[in-house]
Length: 322
Image (cartoon, rainbow, N blue to C red; front, top):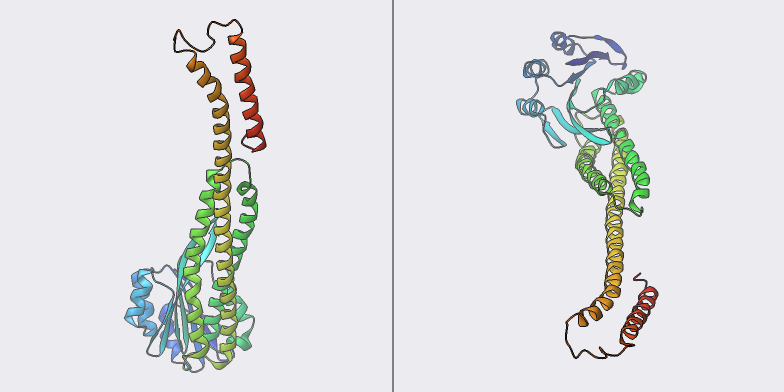
C-alpha cells in the first residue's frame, strides 16, 4: 500500500528511499523534502502518515472515506487537494480519486479506485532535478498534470466511437443498442465533466494563492495545467453537444421511418377499403339492390371498383404514400 517513499535534497536529486518510520527523522534535516505515494491505504497506515507529517484529522478523515468531490482546502500550514481520476476500460469510464497533502517539505498522494501509477510523473521530475529543486509544489504540479493529461484521450476515444456509430445512426434499420450507447456515453461524459470542471477553481487558487506553500517559479506550471483543464472542459462540452445532436438525429430518423411505414399502411388500407366497401354493400342480401337483376351489372361493378382503385393508387403514388 506504500508505493513510494523518497527523500530529496535541496538540489532536487533523490537522496534515498525511506520507510515511514524514518520520515520524521529526515524532516528535521534542513533543505530536504519527502514525497510519499500511497495506494488505497487502510486506517492504520493513514494514522501512521498523519503522525509522521502532523496532518489535520479532518483531511485524514476525508482521505479515509475516499468519496469526496474535487476540492482544495487549507489546514494551517498545509493544503489538502482532492482530484478525480478517470480511465477508459472496455469502452466505459472508470473513476477514482487522488488525495494530495502538500506541506512546505512534503507531498503525500493517496490513490483510490481507477488510477494509473504516478511513477511516470515521479520519473519525469527526477529527470529534471533543477525543477524538482523547487520543492513539493513542483511535485504537486507533476501529479495534477499527469491526472489532467489522462482526461483528453478519453474524450478523443469517445469522439472516434461516435464517428463509428454514425453508420448505425443513419442506417435504414433501427438499432436499440445504438441509442443506448449514445445515452451511456453522454451520461459518462457528464460525470467526467463533474470531475474536470472543479479543477479549474483548484488550479486557479494554486496559481494565485497560498504563497507559503507554492513557489513563484511553479505558478507558471500550474497555469499551464489550468489551460489544459480548460481545453479538456471545452472538449467535453463540445462532445456532449455532438452526442446530444446524434441522439436527436437518430430518434428523428426513427420517427420519420415510422411515419413512412404508417403512410404506406394507410395507403394500402385505403386501396383495400374500396373493394371492401363495395362488397359489403352487395353482401347485404337485399332484393332491390341497384342493377342486381341486370346481366351486365356484375362486370360493371368489378370494372368500376378496379378503376377507382387504380385512380386512388395513382394519386397515392404521386403523393409518395406508396
